[in-house]
Image (cartoon, rainbow, N blue to C red):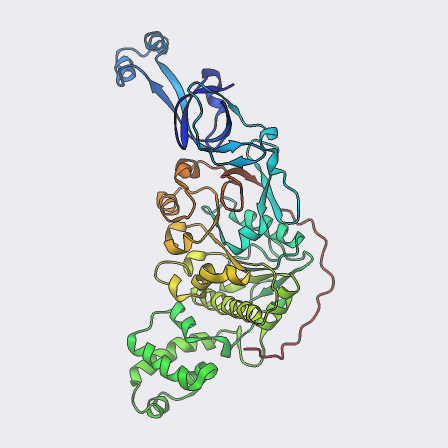
Length: 484
């Protein structure tokens, strides 16, 4: 026993902690309350209390520097306590608590035998770590994690990339196809999954890869330009007119046709200044060396995903180019969403597929989110077995409607109060009990909450290691098909 219940309400209790045990209690610890039922609780706050005059310690401290004198004057009116959220009642699993524990019910730390229901077996779970301070594996429901969307949040250096690599490695074991937008080269050949069986790195210049990425010019839509840059009303009207007439060849037309000829062809409905401004912006797109006209690596990505492969898009030298990041992620994700919609309409069964988006705030901020395909994916992707996992170090910059769609959240160390408050206010999950704990997590520690776990779990994430065998000779792909 480490303490007793001294107050209780429907969703939380306050525990008096024995003096000798106070430094053995940590925020996030799981506790068992022994009453008529066995309650599972989670420590959310630890504090000292004084049943006498509130300012008495300050007054005594002014009068004497001798701590022994202070203790003799304090007597037994000072004690330690912990506030704990009630997670549920344990009974061959965990179920919602509809009662409260009795006054002075005994409290002890949870043990592995109390939580043996977590040792669920089967093909529908992935293991990503262990309960903090307990030798018990954490298993996440695959289908819920993927199709109902997830988020991994933590400051730089907190262990986000390691967590994502552990998740992807588990997906590989279960033959779950994934597409990872690897902005900073964390998951390819330098530090990650490159070289593992069933992993293919599709890259841009500056990074080691298996296949170079090429996006057909015809696959770039006006919406992609809106995501990359701001268009005036006149520019919006001009793009709409040109796209209506030229369709997939709109970029080729604008980049290869003289300004005066464009103005003349559209009978002065478009001003010269408008065309010049659009041509400057479009020129930046067509000049990218990964934008092509005669071949299409998107079909290759689609085919490999259908074979349950994991595709890593390594941005190489473009890791700091926001235009390139927005263009590539938007085009590829829209392509896959449209394919999955088509497969469902035609009655073809598709496997749950996970998209992992690093630096999510670049595309999912309040100004951009509604313009991107990712807002469509978080809203309707589950109908087509396409899920999104967003990874970011600044969740306060992510549009709240997107955060509200994430049904599994893995929270790592967050020291910025804006990040913590935004997560609490925007998440579909109730994260209010974790606000203090978020800023005290160690590297590699996490809070996992949402529908893919039975209760909010204090976790120690496994350390990723590249233990799988090297892939066999890479099979070639003919880039000769344009499947728009």
